[in-house]
Image (cartoon, rainbow, N blue to C red; front, side):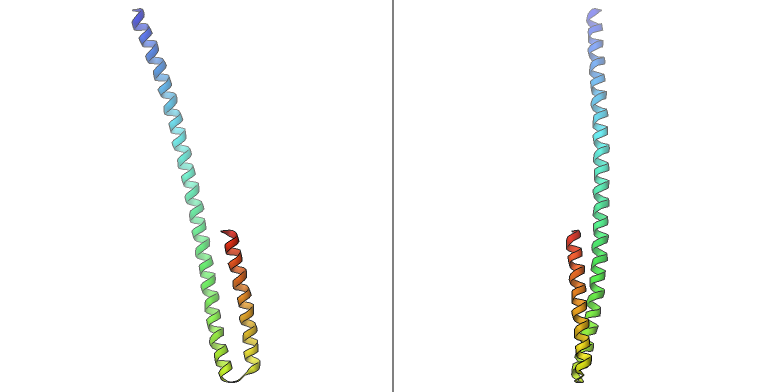
Length: 108
C-alpha cells in the first residue's frame, strides 16, 4: 500500500512537471507566432514602401523621358532658350531623383 502511495505521488509529481512543460511550450509557441506575425508585418510594410518608391521612380523617369524628347525637339529647332530651360529642368529632376534615391537607401 505504501509503495502504491509512493508511486501515485511520483506520478502526480511527473504529471505536474509535464503540465508545466506543456504550459511553457504553449507560451513559446505563442511567442513564436507573435514574432512571425510582426516579421510578416514588417516585411509587408517594406514591400509596400519599395513599391511606392518604385512607382515614384517610374513616374520621375517618365517625366525625364518627356523632357528629353522636348529637349531633342527644342535642340532640333535651334531654340537655345528653350534648350537651356529644359536642361535646367533636367538638372532639377536629376537632383529630385538623387534625393528620392538617398531617402530610399536611408530607409533600407
